[in-house]
Length: 388
Image: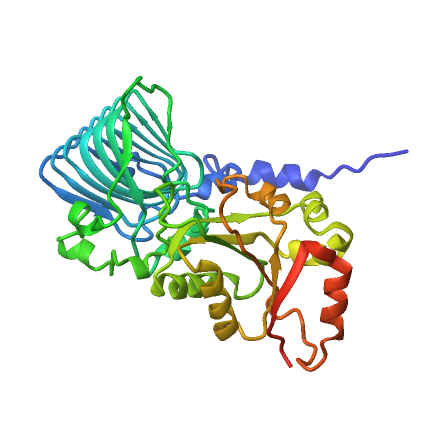
C-alpha cells in the first residue's frame, strides 16, 4: 500500500499573495435574486389606486393591510395573500395557489381566484369568487358571494402557474363556522348582478394597459349558477374525457347551451381511479382505463326544460366525429362527483365524449350493436357520429 503526495500544491499555495485566498463556494441559493418584502405589500394606503402588472408578483406571497378607500389590482399569480384591516376597498386578485385570508375587513368588494378562501371577523363583503375548495367564513356577517367573472389575456396562463383548474369552482358552497340560529351570515348575490358595478376596472394609465373584460361569455372561469334554486327539474350531466381539445370542447358546449337558454349549474375537473371505472363500466372497465390514464375528466351540469334533448342536438351538430352514450342507470357514476348535489327526481343525462378515439366508418354499425348487447340495459345508445 502507499499514498500519493505532492509538494506542488503546497508550493502554489505558499506562493499566493496575502489576501488572495481561495474564493468561497457559491451555492444556487446565493445566486437567487434578492426579494424585497416591500415589493409584495400594500400597507397604510388611503384614497389610492395601486396594483401589480402581470409578471411583477410571479408566485410570491403578498400582503394587503390597513388600506382605506383604495382600489387594488393584482394582475398576477401569487402563493398566498392576506388582507388585514381594510375598509371600503375594491380588490382584484389574480390566481392564488394557496389561501386568501380576509381578517377584520369591512365594506370591501372583491374578485379573486384561489385554492382556499377564508373570512374571519369581517362584515359587509361582496366577493366574486373562484375557489377550488369550500369557502369558509367565521365570526363574520353580511358576506355576499357571486361567481368569478373576469378576463385578461394573461389570466389563463396564470391559472396554470397557480395549479388551479377553471372548472373546479365551489364559489356558492359556503361553510359558516359560527352560524347564528335564525340568521344567515352569508348570501348569494342576485344572478343579474353586473360585476363591473361592484368591482370597476382600473383607471390609472399603467393598469389600464391590462386588457380586462368582465363579460360573462369571455370569463376565463365558466360562469355558473351554483346553489341557486334551479329553474327546472330536468338536468343534464356532460362528462368529457381528457384529450387534446377537451377544454376547448367544454367551453364550446357551454357557449352553445347557454346561448340556447339553458343554465350552467356547476363544473368539475376530477381524476377517475381504476375502482371508479370498475364500478361504472363493470366488465368493460379495462377498455376505459387508457382513456382515464390520459388525465382528469371534465363534468358540466346544465339545467332547464329540454336540456337533455337540447344537448343531444348540439352534440349531433357540433361534435362531429364523437361517440356519445346515454347512461340510464347513472347513480353509480355519480359517486366520483360527490360535490354534485343531484336530487333523485332530476333527469340526468351523462354523455361520454371519446374525442378522436373511434375511426371506423359510419356504415359499419355491427360494433355498435354488440356494444349495446354487451353492456346490457344499463346503457342506451342514442347517437353515434363517427370519423371516417
